[in-house]
Image 1: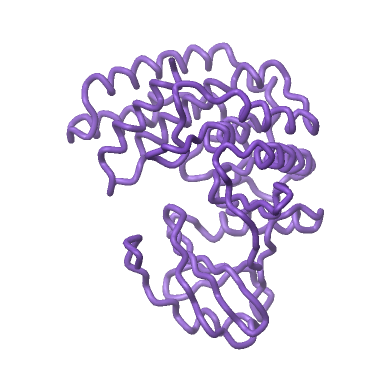
Image 2: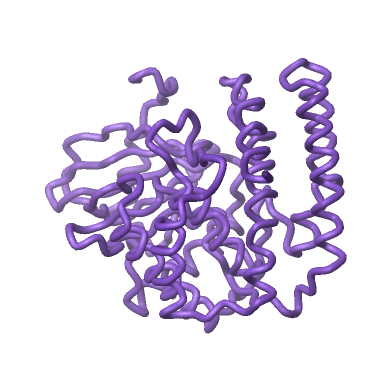
Length: 324
């Protein structure tokens, strides 16, 4: 549909599990990477339904929903999970897992909007203050993320095989591959210098990007969504990802989150100064941010959608610009 993917019909048996009054339409919503999403129009209002990828186990979904319930109970702007008639927070149907949320209205991110960047910085700081008081009943490892900083920066451990496979398939060239090898060595040197005990850890959001944030007319965040990648990790990761995906975006972007040779300082300062009003970053966190951004950029480039093979080289080009 609309060139995005072949949508599978939403089973009526799933909707029957919820007390949503009469559902008059189920409209597929393009976006996201591995899940399928639908906007439900019912007599009682609008709702957002997701059919989750099999990569997310029930245990992971349980962890996500526990965090959401904690945030909602403390007034943080994230849509609550809608329970089923039996009080469960998700439905398993024909081998798939479904979840329903209250629908959130808001505006998307406008590239370079300094007011929105400031609003985002305030919201992320507020979330981190809340998350510092939250300890999950069980820890969850996201599919792509190591629980330690050293493990994430050690690209040679998990990204090198991927890079060699892309090289063998001519998806990237020897020059790009050598850049990954050289940068991996630099990152490992940082691993040796970084002391994770000096970095604050908490349950991060893990996927701060424009598609997961909605703003109101005053540029304040009215909804932060998609907690599928939330996990116990250094909070500087959220900062690094937000700087890349929001402050670093440019109008002529070919790829989502594309950045120029340097992050535009007004955008960086708008986000960072607003964040600092809520949380003061320690020197080790500030020193780690550039390396986290570079590692995130490399991971993005190596695991880009296989439907767009040229984006591997484009993504690595962006990593080279950031490295420079």
